[in-house]
Image 1 (cartoon, helix red, strand yellow):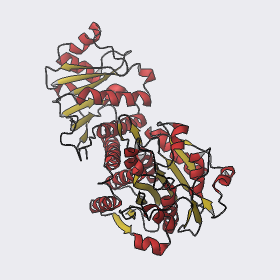
Image 2 (cartoon, helix red, strand yellow):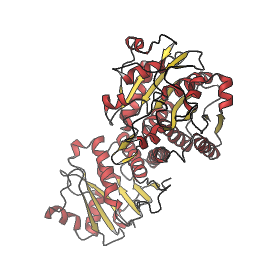
Image 3 (cartoon, helix red, strand yellow):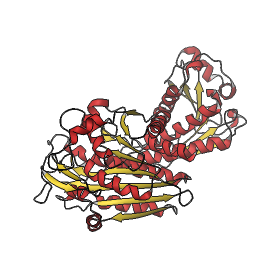
Length: 497
């Protein structure tokens, strides 16, 4: 986990503040003022000289490092473009520029003079939350199986000079939210990046228990295969039938609100490796099927943020963890299994296994009397075709829930796009031999998969997030940690209601 400290302070005199690096946001259409003017005088006019020489023009995304001659050992100038066009997109660019400018420097501590951005309270809070989140998430490095990992940014402490910009309490709260979200993103990415011979269903159960030890409000229970049989989870068990790894249904129960308050329920697809089963996948890029537990990883990352921030909510996280492998006991195409709900399913393709583990988890979720249930899954290649890697596919049986998730995605810049869930598509998953088929034929693959799941979510408000495109990248290869930011923002919004 990335170790980084964020501190909000009111600094009366920027020129007198000792720092390894003073960070100054500068606009193209504004003269030097405030902290920038004081630091310019303290450095014998070096900032004004850089501007006059044209070495630094303050255009958006530009940075320029000066050697300080006073208490600030370095002065980092970051261009913000025109002041009247500085919006959230520009704020994200600012955060990215700051990270890249310091990533190859030796400064372990820096001070950002926030007032130079001239932001109003709401936008200043958003800016600080995003900045903290980005610095933490971008500093994540995979180290588990590498003898010489890539070096990370040296910066470990960022002081925010809030004087003239934002109250200390609000700044600290925003920084804490951003840091917790960034850590959650890193946690999710790390779990998904682990190889399938390490990150097994049992390993995920161990990680849940480890998380519970860090929070007195979190308890964990694990349903094993014997208990699954007693519960009638034939769909979930059909996926793990060909694997030496036993399936696990991992339940993390966070109690941050009064007893009896209906919980928000997160359900994650945790296929720790997906060979396709008897419907074996092509060999090319099969290694990337270690990422097929990206939904489960995002649930872990979100629960890390929830417990760190001690949100005043009740949240239940359910991870349906299994490995999909072919052997003599594996489920075959044409087999019929009975789900926990009692519905029978004709398994026409064993590579459409995520919906089989999720349908039993969704039925199990009803026992918690949820306020809402959100499942997250790397479910369909069809979603990648439809939306690419930028947007998560969103399906919902309730408009208000869909709007809340869309709004959280926009606010966190971890965006989703709502897809149809019309009854017209249900005909594609009919079977002559069972209540449902697990695939819907050609056309609308992400939609028919969501329609399948919807058959097990009639009893509550439900949404499905298909992250097959947004959950990982092939080049460069690695997990993204999405949609932890969206989910955390959604829960922060519910906590604020």
